[in-house]
Length: 363
Image 1 (cartoon, rainbow, N blue to C red):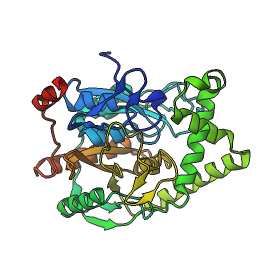
Image 2 (image 1 turned 180 degrees about the vertical axis):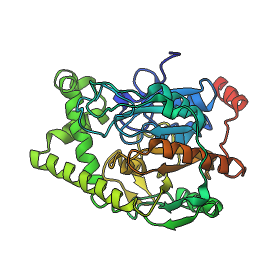
Image 3 (image 1 turned 45 degrees about the horizontal axis):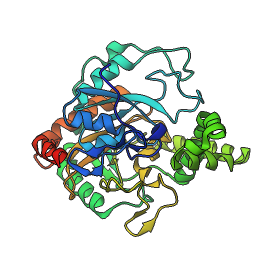
């Protein structure tokens, strides 16, 4: 253990800012956010303070800061990294996972993390040796589906344009590359319900005894759960199950799904969350996380890998999603895609200017 990195309060929200330590800036532009909840970890990786970092992921807490900072964040299948810390042990929405500067480094940490723990009802026997090395993958044999917005997510025009450009650069490497996506009808409502249930389970005592000390994100999520009925909870779980089954049907004809990791570029530090995208007002403070929480719902493994810069000068990232429980296949494929991206300066992993950061810090 090296140290503790900065996070938002109880990991709520993708902006690493809290009343104790304040905000963590983006290593490519410290006036912008670095993402969250594992924002401090992503910055430590991007600036080579550390080679690997741990984190958790509910709506994108490993993947979003990785995308904003130009590193790798992997959300594994629930139970692969066993944990006794989920209050609702049978609910797969929250997982523990690794971050690294490369897919190989991320795999190295995952090998140390995987385990079978009887306290985690989703865990099962696993051999860490299965994750010891990256296996070669022939990209020309893969059937790839790409989507910029799942047909329903508001997307910043700069992210949309950058994604289209990057897909055009790499699509020839695959056996096929088609614009299509699984049916995500009611995904936003489903995630809101399942997320609120978890906040009810995790923060009941804090809310009842110390509501005045909690930040607005925790209070809003907890009170959203309080307003729900048992019928609402059942509906949310039914919708999540339908989405999972739609993914299974989708992956019968597809080996890999690629989409943007984030819907917007990093916004200013003083902005708590993104309230509007491309002129469309968002219904909740976390709605801008949709590209990652859409892939949380079916619990398929997903990974964010760097893919050059977007127009604001901060990192752009691709999010790769694999079939259910095929974590090693996804990591091997991500390593092959990463190698492909590294060959082109337009898509290679960007590095922050450390000297410029030192100058900014002095100011």
